[in-house]
Length: 191
Image (cartoon, rainbow, N blue to C red; front, side, top):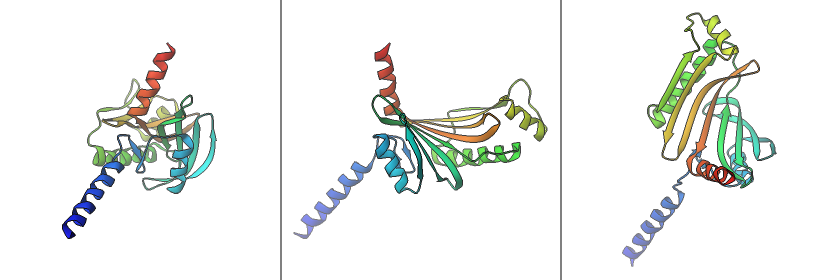
């Protein structure tokens, strides 16, 4: 009888572990899947605050990967209300040294978790400035391309330096493969 209960407990543990394994890319341990409201609820349980939900998108605020005051954009396929992409915008920076430090620290953490990036572009357009101030000017003029991409079986992760109307920041994007493929299939149906 004791052997029966041990076997039953082992079987249930295996089944529960298998059920928790997701085929989707995860964000903070949560599969990038489900409706916008379901995903936002899980994120608020993880400590994020919801700043608004509209037109298939949600904006959350909170701390991420040891960085304070991040903005998290959650995107869906509007016609299906299916979450497929998460964008993390880290706090804006006002010098090249703080911006690049942010980028390279996050890149190293991602390498430790996912291995070497499958694609890297780290350059300034047409000229490689040596001076920190000149690098900053290139960032503000959108002449800076720093992008590291990890292609995984579950989706794509991309780290980049961004400049939007004079605000420069590091952005980290998670795109779930399964749900992105569903979006592509829907787009092809429209063609």
